[in-house]
Amino acid sequence: STDSVESCLDCLLKALIWKISGSGFAGNKCFKHQENQSYVGLFHQEKVNTFMRSPCVEAGLIPPLVQLLHSKDHEVLLQTGRALGNICYDSHSLQAQLINMGVIPTLVKLLGLHSDNTALTEMCLIAFGNLAELESSKEQFASTNIAEELVRLFQRQAEHEKKEMIFEVLAPLAENDVIKLQLVEAGLVECLLDVVVHTVDGVREEDVAQLKTASDLMVLLLLGDESMQKLFEGGKGSVFQRVLSWVPSHNHQLQLAGALAIANFARNDGNCIHMVESGIVQKLLELLDRHVDEGNVTVQHAALSALRNLAIPVVNKAKMLSAGVSDTVLKFLPSEMPPVQFKLLGTLRMLIDTQADAADQLGTNGKLVERLVEWCEAKDHAGVMGESNRLLSALIRHSKSKDVVKTVIQGAGVKHLVVMATSEHMIMQNEALVALGLIAGLDLVGAEKDFVGAGLVQVLHKLLSDEMSAPEVKYNSMICAFFKDSSSLDLFFSHPPPEPLHKEVQGLAFIDVVSKLRSHENKTVSHQASLTEQRLTAQS
Image (cartoon, rainbow, N blue to C red; front, side, top):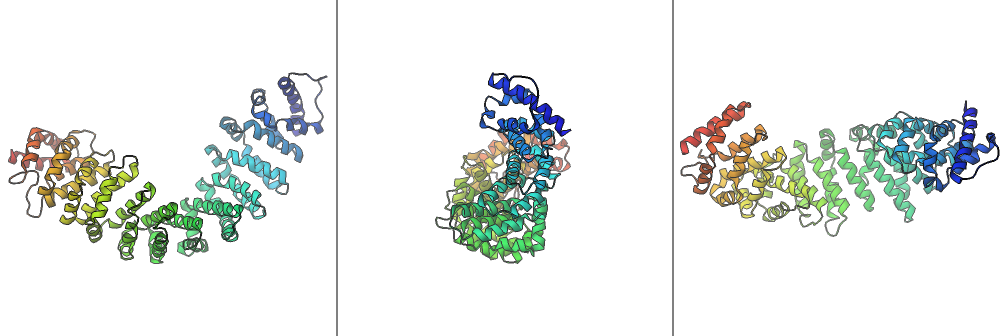
């Protein structure tokens, strides 16, 4: 029973205090029940985190303390919770022990039973904040009605400090997708929107803090697929509409949250198509225009992220291009901020996918190509470097334009595509090889010097020789070497072949490598190897 546990705990506490203090107590009878709270209270002092923690744990104090959480005495509950919190503070192993003992459902139940008791409520919130940091706690939290309890508690709070305490619990919990949905269903979003309304024009420091916390949490809830779709409601949801109104706001925090929310809503084609049809692109372009000169970098990044996601569905690309998205995005070309550069590149790459005219127009923009070549060497920012290479390749692949190829050659971009062909990512290898094949097909004479200087033949030889190369890479490597132009002339082995390239092919015994591929298990590769071998034989 609870009384017997408390009685035994009295004796245990007596022994611990004697051990820690180095002094004994007269007699050996247990302390009275009323005194229990006082001795438990000793363990919520700060000292427990230094010299008292180890003896507490070694003496097995945690299990009986957990049992005391079932007490009906408010003071015992309070002191017990504080003692457990201090003993386990900043110790993931001890917190995990509490989780395994089922303390989370017990504390959630306590919160529901004693929500009118301020001290007990705060004790529970502090405990939740600590335990929620552990990933192993999320499943237990999700199995309780924690979402309903926290939202109900939040709705009753008027003081900033109390709301902040709840926010500190909600943030780590909302990282779990199951709990995200539970919080949405419990009505948290309406609470957050209410906070935004009451703080957006506030000048007090606490208003600014609450606005940021509430809007950030709103964005976090939208990271869950189910919670996001529930709030989208086919594009007609009141929450969705309210969030959209944040974009033209005068407040940078709301602009940021609004743009991030759109990016999160734009995670499936249906949502993207609906949003483009409803005119959201124009709102984002107007927002970006407000942040071109010395603008807010986080807002720039968020708005570009939203545009990139919206540009993914094929049906949206032409509409967005017509709306002037590429022109607005290019205004940020001078940016020196890698996050903005990364999203800028991704947005343009998504826009020109399958859009030949747009790829042609952008690919002949000398300033853009010059900047791409510069970013292809941004070794300190792998994301920017990778996206620059991919966009350079995409301009060629989607335009299939001789003018674009000439612009890339003149901008010294060919060598970067050759390096890209050696990437550890297969998709990038294939994109580079296709682009290189097109360069060879459209302007071999202009690119010959760059091909030789960058060691293209050696790269192709290595890709074909490497057993780890994917079948698609081997196939595209052979296609690259034998791409045909409109006159059906073989390129690296045309009549007459470019002498430097021809010598390199002969010197590397290319034909031996290709011959081995005739027996490749992939039929497409083996067939292309047979064709390639025939052409090599004819040229030898």
